[in-house]
Amino acid sequence: MNGKIKLLLFIGLLVALLPVMSFPRNIKNTILFVLGIGLILLAFGIKRGVKTLRLKLKRLEGQQGTMIG
Image (tube, rainbow, N blue to C red; front, side, top):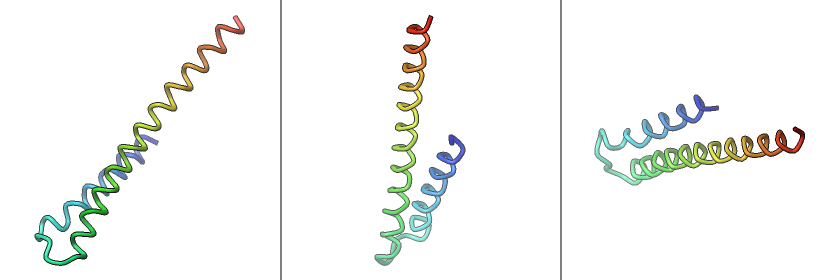
């Protein structure tokens, strides 16, 4: 899962940098830049969500272990 998040982040970075390399001259390049930034933000959001879910899962496993033992 972590590799897929890094890939999504890389693709977003690549998409965001494409219009910057040729300076945005029309609306299509601007939309492409905004789409790339959106992909980067999506990757960070997914990464944060996965991290919190893992922490919640560890807490749940820890609570079950103490209740059984």
